[in-house]
Length: 235
Image (cartoon, rainbow, N blue to C red):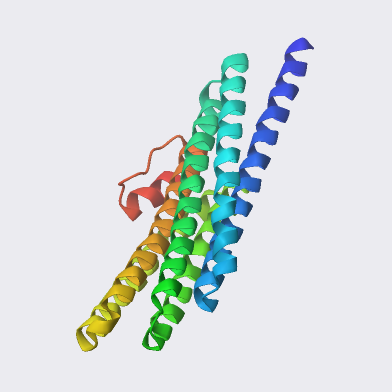
């Protein structure tokens, strides 16, 4: 009976930590969406709100890390429970970096506004919004897979990563063309390249989350594995 009580407590602690991770994920997702709104509208007020949220995201990472350390010290988990706690640690690290990318986009918005962005760059900004939609969708799907420990959903995230990479490559080519045609756009175009790269990294972090989920459920590390090997791992 005492063992069952301890098991119930442990399950409750794991559930509490998982909920906190999802809360952090929601905050980061909102931060990213807000950063892209700031870029689309060239809004310094919205950009400032994104940057202010960075401290909240960092604080959540530290708080969840402390909870993890406490649970590991008290419970000394093994097997899948230990994998889950390791996965949580990796997940919050990736989420914190997504928050960093959102803040980086917001700071670039401020820089563009202060420099007086060219109207010729409105179209690349619209293309960036599409890349961000893809990355945000991957992040949302990865968080959903985490909530359900759903490897099939995680696999979808891995398969979509190439699409985000292709969009980044297309944006890079387009921005290089703008710079060649009008040297006055070089500075702003380079800033937009950094935004595109930040969004591409968000997709990478979503991919990392998906790989972590497969590790938790299947106990197989699929980092750097071929798609065929990943599919075999989740069967």
